[in-house]
Structures are given as structure tokens and as C-alpha cells.
Length: 86
Image 1 (spheres, one colour):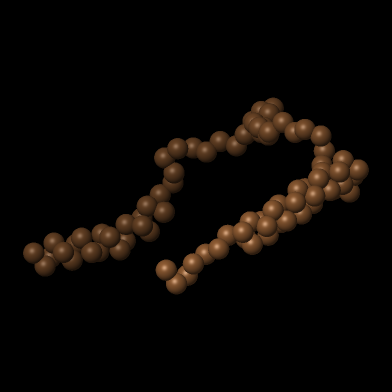
Image 2 (cartoon, rainbow, N blue to C red):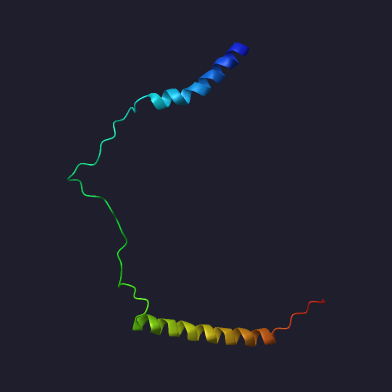
């Protein structure tokens, strides 16, 4: 019994070194020189220009919307009465 356990332990210790020393079963071939690379990218719309006039218009619309939402939130907060002693 002890001899079997010893053999299993030795085989587990030395197996990775033996496996790494063997040559690979499958040959890895480099890409052929005339093979085109297969790269797939998402189609893009217009290029993003962070300081363009179009971007400024969008940013102003977002700023106005956010200001309106903040005012509406403040009005709602004043109207809501939460009873914490109930």
C-alpha cells in the first residue's frame, strides 16, 4: 500500500517535467506570407471631434436638461413629506 502511494507521489512530481520536455504532437505552422489578416472591426460613423460645434450643441442640450431635472427634483423633494416617526 505504501509502495503504491510512493509511486503515485513520485509520478505526480516528475510528470510535468517529462511532459514539458517532450516535443509537441501538433506542428505549429507560421502564417503564410500571402495570407491576409482576418481583422473585423465595427463600422464607424462620423469621427468624434470633442471641441466641434456639433459637440458644443449636444453638451448645451444635456446641460439644460440636467438643470431642468435638478429643479424638478428639488420641487418634488419639497412636496414630499416623509414621516420618520411612524
